[in-house]
Image (tube, rainbow, N blue to C red; front, side):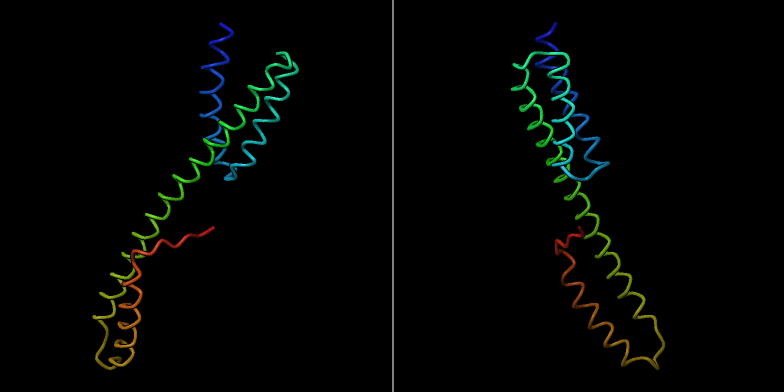
Length: 128
């Protein structure tokens, strides 16, 4: 039973909780530090000092899970930002063609700017 706890339950719980904490804290190194602190207390309270190796392994596992979660959320957010930028540029181009004839010079300049921006629709801009 003890081996099942050490080799299955604790690693799976570490991965799941690291994903949850990463979405809340948004800092993989803090998630790993949190797990190291918890497992360090558990090491000396419930196990022997031999469990310290497992503590380091679980901390690395928590960091990897948090970093992977951060990477995936950044990719998803970038794709949503790129889709929103493409939709906004399309809407701006459609709105500019429906303006009054008296503002032709302003519309031509605005259309030129929108055309320039729409060429960058696929850029991978990141907000931090």
